[in-house]
Structures are given as C-alpha cells and as structure tokens.
Length: 168
Image (cartoon, rainbow, N blue to C red; front, side, top):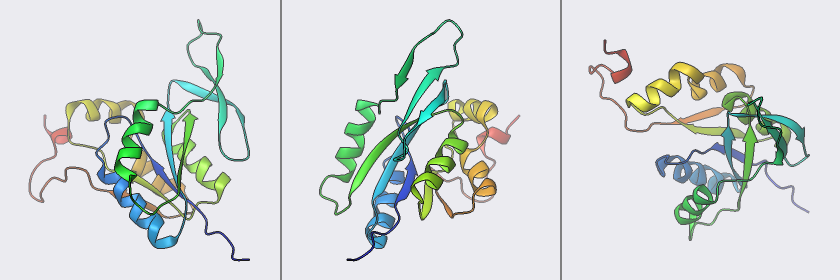
C-alpha cells in the first residue's frame, strides 16, 4: 500500500485574492497531497485541540463566556469551493484560533505538512493597520518554522516604487 504524501497547509482569509488558494492547489496537485485550507480567528484562543488539528476555542473578550467548536466561515468555504471547482485536488478546511503565525505553524506540525503557503500582505491602508498590530504572518512563519513557507505575491509593487506602508 502506497503511503499518503504529507498535506500542504494554506492560510486563507475572507476577501483574500484567489491567487493564494490557486497556487497552493497547484503545489498540492504536483505533490499528490491534500490541501488543508486554514483560517485563523485572532480574537479567540485555543482550549482543546484534536488530532486532526480542529479545535475548541474561547473569546479573549472577558464579558464573553462562550466556548465553541471552531466553525469554518461558510462564505470563505464557498469562495474556496468556487476556486477549486474542477481541480484535481483533495482539500479540507480547519478553523483555528489565536496568533495566525503560531496557529498555522502549529497546525502544520500537527498534520506534518510538507509546507505552508500564505499570501504576501497587500499594499493597502487596511492591511497596513493589520500589519501594525499583528505583524507579517509570512515573515513570522518564515523565521519560526522548520518546514518551507511559500509566499504568494499579492499585488506586487514594482522595484523602485515606495510601498504604501513606507510612505510618511
């Protein structure tokens, strides 16, 4: 019996360009691997993890006493289904909680992923504010992982031009 290749983990967010999932699906197809699409909610923290990487979490909000099984965003799932429709790749989703870089890295370790795929940050004010508070997930993963991290460029800025986040 042939051994199943290790999966590929791709970080996904609502509104993210399709290029990230498309590129990750190409890698998964080439490796014959399952593609695990993982979304992280930074407003929650991990309570319990299962062997497949799924989890139960709680809100950081002290007024919220809810603990819930993490559920993958149905709108994001529909976007992924649309992007991967007709592609020869096995895929699944995981809803994670906590720091995005740590959560993606931990999931990759749990499922013994061959690589992690993420998108670069987009040169917009909204993404610059997110970067200010969370830092670059891609950068943090690339410095804190023992497995390869593939960064898919999103709306790259030509060499010689100043990125919007460097403008004063």
